[in-house]
Length: 416
Image 1: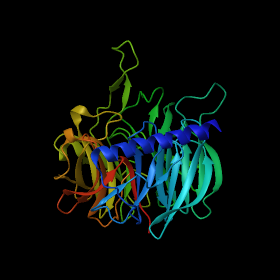
Image 2: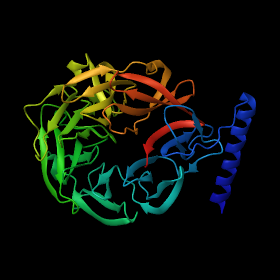
Image 3: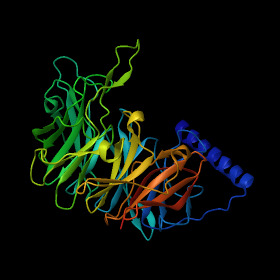
Image 4: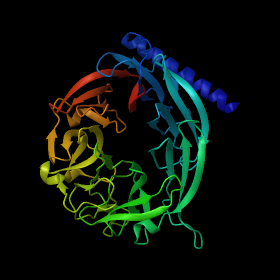
């Protein structure tokens, strides 16, 4: 009862703050915007408030607001995935189990399909008709106890967990460190799991190695590790570094941000230790080895930038977040954008995007219809304004689209 009352009081306080703001700024009330786009928004009026999900009919114009609108989520630290035309809202429980809510869209409005509780996981992706989620250890288990991944299969047909198991988390690295998965991806009929090896606090003694653990599906039996020493690890923490293009080839980016404890300081402190450039490598379709004939040195092609995230937009093209090499870091997401063609090995800076000094952060869960031309990226500005920008890959330009009122964009997705 206490929790319910407290939550109710917060809702009333939130409504009061928003009402006060509306009166003070004489804002026009924005009505619901029914549509098939879903935007996850974290409120800014009250700290540690759960996300709201709002719909939109277009991302290219107009406005949406969580003030008086949207479906409130249960708990903070949400992450989202779309599969089988359903939207899964998952709670990161920080070690504890978290609520998962499944939505569809009917007549432009969110429709709750199911609720269930799942373990807190660190990597997730659609695989066949499932969503595969994996809980990844950060520390070695006690002596005599195996250090394992815990994996779970959720059916996108029944919206319920249909399988679970464990897999050894040390064997894939081959160096005695934990193979901490940066993400997972279905490639052909396998699950590819790029990782960064860690021994403590995400530090490693093996900074110049890239590895992808390969698992069979659905039994998640470990088969092998695809290795390369031309780059550092693939992806970043909670960041998908793999992209599968139309012909089945798989491209992998490295930010070159491996780190170790700096012995020159008296406290635990990260020091970049990789000697390899930020680069893109390839695994050809129906193979499980890095293609040694392909190497895309991203730092050279971009004149001194590293790639920190990307959005696959189809046609062998990606919208990449980029950051100057001098300011790269383990958790730094670039606030500049570029169009990357992985076949032509080209990088073209996007114009029309807000200046770096104007940006608070750039949304990392974004949407593309995969037409080879278009992507939609959320931008939260220092001014407090929040927009979705349409990125035109053909002209490498950004065009400001829909405005989001009441909070910060955390995800943009679409259901049919």
